[in-house]
Amino acid sequence: MTKNSNDNEHEFISFEPNQNTKIRFEDADEDEVAEGSGVAGEEAAQDESMFDAGESADTADVTDDTTSADYYFDSYSHFGIHEEMLKDVVRTKTYQNVIYQNKFLIKDKIVLDVGAGTGILSLFCAKAGAAHVYAVECSQMADMAKEIVKANGFSDVITVLKGKIEEIELPTPKVDVIISEWMGYFLLFENMLDSVLYARDKWLVDGGVVLPDKASLHLTAIEDSEYKEDKIEFWNSVYGFDMSCIKKKAMMEPLVDTVDQNQIVTDSRLLKTMDISKMSSGDASFTAPFKLVAQRNDYIHALVAYFDVSFTMCHKLLGFSTGPKSRATHWKQTVLYLEDVLTICEGETITGTMSVSPNKKNPRDIDIKLSYSLNGQHCKISRTQHYKMR
Ligand code: SAH
Image (cartoon, rainbow, N blue to C red; front, side, top):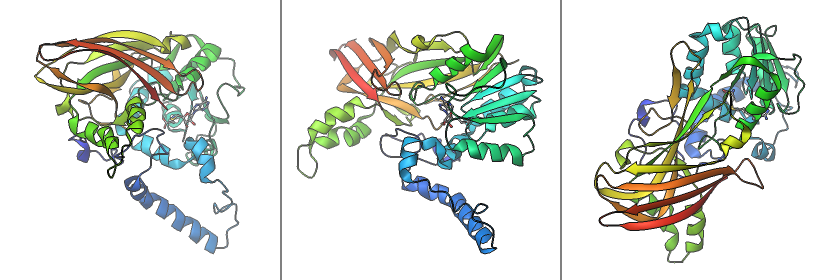
C-alpha cells in the first residue's frame, strides 16, 4: 500500500512497517529501532556515566532483569510503545486540548485514569486543577509513572496504582471523571474498552463524565492492486514454489497500514457509533449494514475501516479521526482485502453487512464477518468473508 502522501510532514509517523502491524510494540522494524536509538543511546550513556561515578547499582538501572519474553506478553512495559503513542500528536494533543481548554470538566474533580501508561493524561489533569487523580496501570510502566509523577511535583495530587483496573482497590468510593486512551487498531482490537466500562460501572458518580464519550467506526473502499499483489498474490509463487495455502491465511488477517486518500473509490459510511458513557460491554459486538457508492470508475481490492473519537462534553466539540483523509495517527487504517477484484462504475453501490465480535477463545482478538454484493454493469458478485484480528 502506498504511504499517505503527507507522511513526511509528520514526525509522529516515524514507523512504517511494510508488514502486518499487529501489537504496537512487537512490530518494531529496522526503521523503528533506528528511530528510537537516539533516545535509547542517550539513556544508555547516562546510565554508564552514573555507574562509572560509583553510584549504586540501584541508581543506575543495571538491576533490570526484564527479558524480551516479558515484553512479548506485556508490550506496554517497554517505553518504546509509549514513545510511539506520546509522539502521535493527533492523539496526545487532542487529550491535552480537551483537558486544558475545558478545565471546568476537571478542576476540583476526582479523576480516574484507566491505563495510565507513563501517566501523561493524569499529569494533564493534575495541571488542570484536579482535586485528585488515580492513575491505574497494570504494566511495569506503573513504576515509571510513579517516578514521573514525583519528578514533576504531583505526588500529592496523583496516586499511581499498579495493577489491573479489574483487580485493584481504589481508595475512594466514587470518581467524577474517567479518562482513558483505550482505543486499539480497528477501534476494538485489544478490547480495553471493557476495562473502561467496568471502571465506569463500579466507580463513576451519577452524571459523571467519561473522556472520550463517543467512538465511531467507518467504512470505505479502495483501489489497491499493487499492495494486494505484494501482500497476497506473492504467496502464489515464492521462488517458483506454490505457497498459496498461506495466501488464505493472509487474506483473513486485516492489515494495519496507511491508505493514500487517492486510493479511495467510494464514499464513506458510518458503521457504528458507541456512547462510552451509556453502552454495555455487549454493544461492542454488532452487525451493521452498509452501502458504499462509487465516486468514479475503478477497481476495488479492499474495504478500509477507521474510527474517530469525540469528547462531546467539551465547551466546543473536540476529537480526532483516524481516517485516510485526516492527518495520520499510529492507528493508521485497517484494510480488509476482498477475494474478488470488483470492477465498479461511478454511481454503482456495494451493499453489505459487517459483523464484529470479540473472539470467543481470546476476547482481545476480533472476529469480523463481511458480506458484500455488487450488482454492476461489469461485475456481479455476492460473497461472505471472515477475518480475524490477532
Ligand atoms: N494513558 C496512556 C497509555 C495509553 S495505552 C497514554 O495516553 O499515553 C493503554 C495503557 O493501558 C497501557 O499502558 C496498558 O498497559 C494499560 N492497560 C490496559 N488494560 C488495563 C487494565 N485492565 N488495567 C490497567 N491498565 C491497563
